Length: 148
Image 1 (cartoon, rainbow, N blue to C red):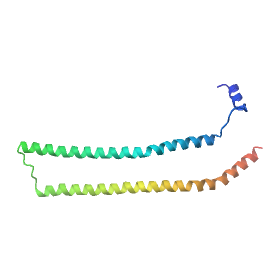
Image 2 (cartoon, rainbow, N blue to C red):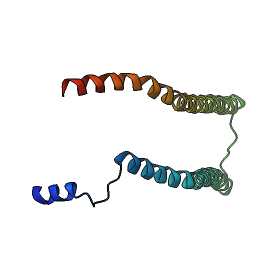
Image 3 (cartoon, rainbow, N blue to C red):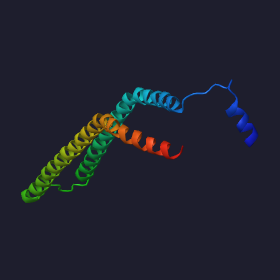
């Protein structure tokens, strides 16, 4: 756009003008409304994905064990192991489950902490803005006074 065209558009008193802050506010409100609409769908999709993944993983493990068992039986392979080896496998599995439970508790605690931090941020931003207004007024007054 040429400078002349730009000047004629901005100086035309009949041209409708809008406050840029209101435009941003309106558009961000629309954006967040759309995000809030889709959040339950994301949650449901993610939950369904987790359930399907877990079921597929469980089926894969069970099918593999069944296939190994069938192979051993058809080939007369002895699958018995000494008790100490069985105990090692059992103890390893129990310790793994314990570690996963600790990991899950840690992740949930981290999510709760992050959620509380967002709540604190949300609750403290308006007071921060209120405290900042006098500084803004001071600097604007100083700037306007020096530019007159």
